[in-house]
Image (cartoon, rainbow over all chains, first blue to last red; front, side, top):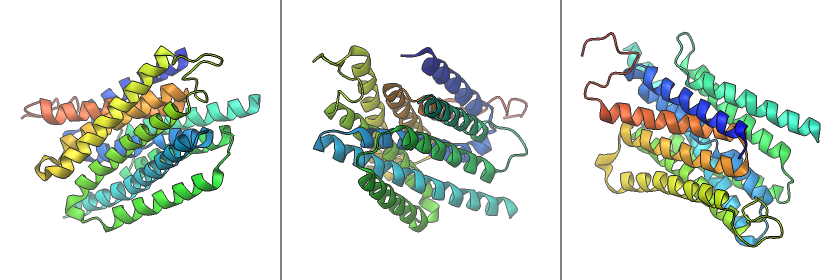
Length: 93
Length: 217
């Protein structure tokens, strides 16, 4: 396991914890929407796995991973935009 | 080859910066700009993955991408507004399920991802542990979603934060397995911030963080 991977991981964890702790409590739902989008980055891993797969089972599982990841990413993007619109409308009232 | 490695590393670094910009709480940045930064980071990671791989079954992959995108868009557009949080929890569960499927695919094709050393017939311990962590965290995210589907009273911001945290950890473990720095950053960020938010929602009686420290309860 390379040092770069570990260093990046611990730095990202530190940034994540500080971001979660520093954001005002009222803004936590909007932070959760952004985190949902970031957590769907598994789509990149699914693409790598689907492209490398050798046996039939591995191939179909890789394609299922791509399908689920794509649904998660696109759905998250639209859902977060919708919730942001709802919050903006509520704050105007 | 050197140019390809440099381009991929650059894409990972840019994606990591975009993720940090999206999540870091600074004034003056609109919520929409943060959303687009996060989406651009994920797209950059996808581009780096597509750039670096030997594509054998590209038509099937593009088909799966388009079908998944259509299902996601349809779900998110048609879902009733007041229950949007349950949809977001389900989408977090889908992200965990993605890691489960990818881990299973790696298990069925161990030589391609270094699970078994070339010429050997034994699974490497470090890779086996990472695979187990991916399955555990991905399974936890999926189980939380199923639990929220069965008992609707459980749905709420705390469960959403927990699901996101677990999906993030599973993506990070998968990224360690695939040696993908950009995905490690995204997974670590989502995992740590999701668990931190869940702790903040559940654990503290007056729900104060550093930003609220000056306020009265």
